[in-house]
Image (cartoon, rainbow, N blue to C red; front, side):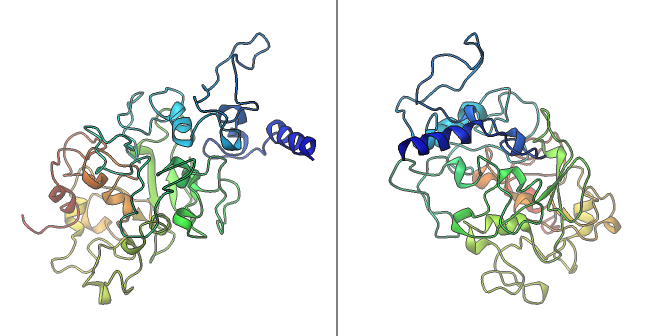
Length: 350
């Protein structure tokens, strides 16, 4: 039996994955040896002469699933300061793109405090929900695989079986089920939740190359995914946790089914949003993400990413202080406070 198990593992490592488009770590983008090692030991590369790069094995090897290191340390061996993969922790070392998701923090040191977004290794309960990372065992605290599937994930219920989930997001965040966020690459498809203008390259993850469609007029696939952990912060108009009866009297800020300026009369303003040179990200079914006049603002709907960086940034809660002027950064632009963010869509206060 042991021999059969060993042969099965060898077959897994030698298996050529199906050719699939989309993000790395999926289909033909899977390179097993980058993350796994057969014998928990390695002293040279895979070239015949012993050359070639390989990921260093952690000091406490062997690890479960034949991993080279603990999950966060393994992921960050490529995703923190390397030029071959996006830098997702703290500052953007390779640069120069402004990352759509911003930055995770880990040790909570300045200027990326633990209050400024998702904190790796934290055991805190997710705000607005009941889910919390493991507090005991081999992988204590929040880790990358809580949100991202390292082998790619088609997403349960996702109609796109080729590209699968946007950014390899898991389909069961926080233990939820059937949460999917599909996407289009290079050529937009308004039936998909996300549009990536580039398939690869240094600007692949830049905010200028990622936008959000609105395939559902009363929902957000992205928001529903975030709801897997942050339960009470999401829902439709009229839900007990959200309010919004009759299009107003919201109890929590809507993340779907509330268009900018739809009500008028002192609520959000089409002209205010259209007048911003730099705009926060919104969902739209028409593909017009940068309207220049109030007449062009017809179906623009804010969602989670309008106000927050998915990973975080240097602002509390990963908020985007976007005033509408100046150079855009992951923190916003010339904005210095949350008021600047609110006034992207709201005209109260002058």
